[in-house]
Image (cartoon, rainbow, N blue to C red; front, top):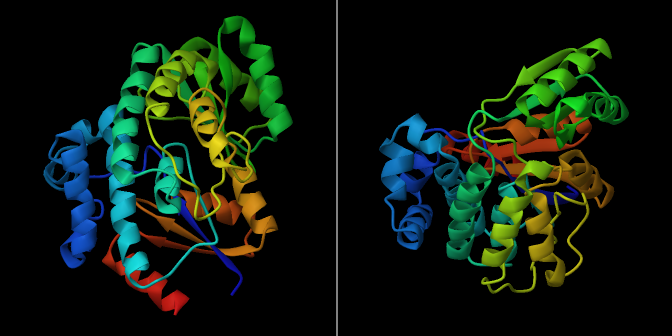
Length: 310
């Protein structure tokens, strides 16, 4: 086996009950939820295990909840001494990667993410922003579609997920116009995303500025495992760049495909998606089918992954 990467999901992967059976089996996983509840002064266990989808979909709840579930799902690997050579996460998942790498504490991560979610939601009033996944076009074609629609408002690439899947973000009319142009250019589909704000575009600059203030309050340590930055698609070179990359990530595109290709180029041949869903595994298979993808979100997937690794 070559090198292993632990990867962590982003917003949209959440669901009521995520990580619950792992927490019932592993006390250290249950402790992660207790720590999140203490850090945020909320009942994270109730919200995630017994709450409702609408509450979980509120961005300032979603972001810390997903990272809590992800770090809980990570604990069985830590117990068995299974380590990653690289780690990365999609958008808010990058915070989980830094927790695994030891860059900052789990408590600091969930506190930052609750504020990050609130700042991102406040930046654009509900109903004024939109995100759409464009399927089947190249990066150049998508950039051309955005340029051709800019007279209608702000529209920019927000996520480069994998070959043939790029997400647009911006003001509603501009996103709709760019989507229509993308279809004319040969896109297979333009799929609206059920989001409450236009993430990872210039409309969220104010959210990034507020987050920067909060990031400056957090103590960071040397990374024990190399972490990939969404904003560059490369390994974060030093801890002096951590806060800047997380600050810029809020209003700049997520270069997930680039992150994956960088890790493969450095010898990673096994990716373990840790946390709710298998979205990232799908992106990776569309990027390079020669690598292995595994996931851990419940006891069944945990058992499968452990069998594959041992």
